[in-house]
Length: 127
Image (tube, rainbow, N blue to C red; front, side, top):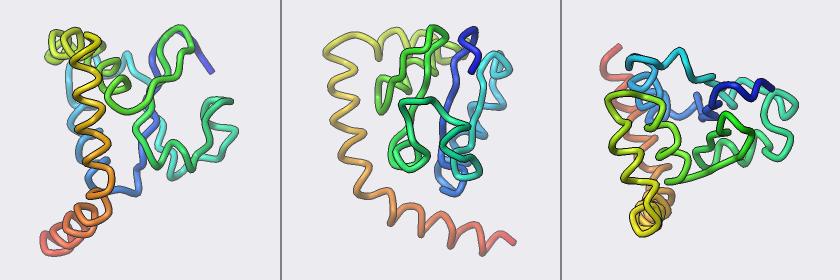
């Protein structure tokens, strides 16, 4: 795994995640980020300390120096690599802020399956 760019591990089977990651991928400088859809990967395709199952359960980013971050800290890391979000990423990295964002992220996770179902239903209506 290259250590020169951050790597985003995301659940491409999740319609919410696909939409969000697609939004980030359309941003300036998104080519500076390596994007790994763990729903299509095998454990050997992700970080040695991260299984596909763990990567599908929470958002993860491996920093350019090989540090693995998850949840709010992972979002903060990603945002610092995208010019439109750089300031938000720097603010989010602040100790009190990242902790509050992590609490919000943990509150979101139990609602994620219901939101995924709603998103899949909406996707079917658009087809």
